[in-house]
Amino acid sequence: MKAIYPGSFDPFTNGHLDIVERALKVVDGVVIAVLNNSSKKSLLNIDQRIELIGEVLHNYGNRIEVKSFTGLLVDFCRTQKTHVVIRGLRAVSDFDYEHAIFLMNRKMYPEFETLFFMSSSENSFISSTIIKEVASLGGKVTDQVPEAVNRKLLEIYPGKNPV
Image: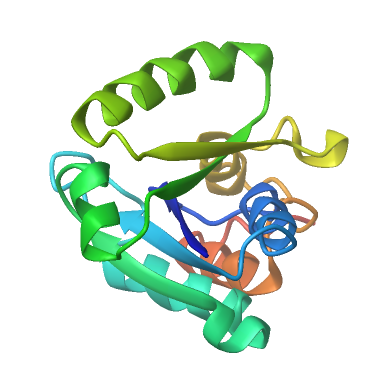
């Protein structure tokens, strides 16, 4: 069985990586579904995000696919011939939001299922938004993002390299 792990992944963090690695212990493969939301201002364009995630996860071979999608997640799931979605939860507050989304998706696609993974304690505070802000202000994020992502952030914010 393969599962979809949807998100904006702008940028991909160690928290995302942790969820993928743990999901691969439960499912045969994971499709990282990078949301292409043209109405949202992203730090990295869709191609950069896909390329970085592919670089980070290249060791997993054909167990990982990285694709972009627009529109409804349930429609993307149908095109991928799966009904299982992976979601990470950092805090109890995430559950309320994710539960509402699950219920709506289930209404549109009755076979739809979500597997929730709780964040590991070392990743529970990591968010892409915080990573972008810290990196833009010259803070060190090497412990929160994979090396390839850190290199890209240092490229985007040249002169902001942490001491």
